[in-house]
Amino acid sequence: MKISEKKLKEKMIKNCLNNRELSKKCGISEGTITRIVNGNTEPRLKTLGLIIKALNCDVLDILEEK
Figure 1: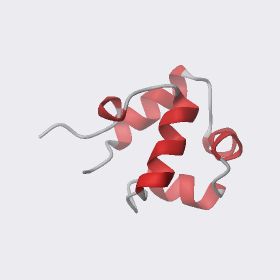
Figure 2: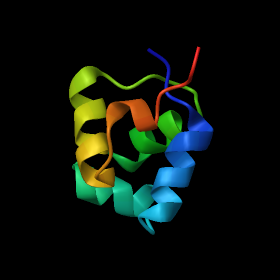
Figure 3: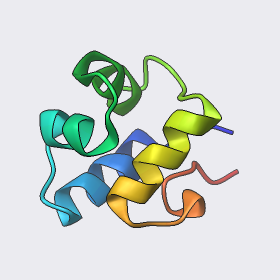
């Protein structure tokens, strides 16, 4: 399961959130959010759930297509 950086960034823009704002909304460190957004790490399931909830989207909306 790989997060699409492009789709994640699009959802963040749609929700008018930058890394810091998403971090606060999720309760996840800004550094972790930055690493996920830049594709340097994959989130744990719990973290992914928090991001999806903050972005008000479905997990399939931010996953890479195969």
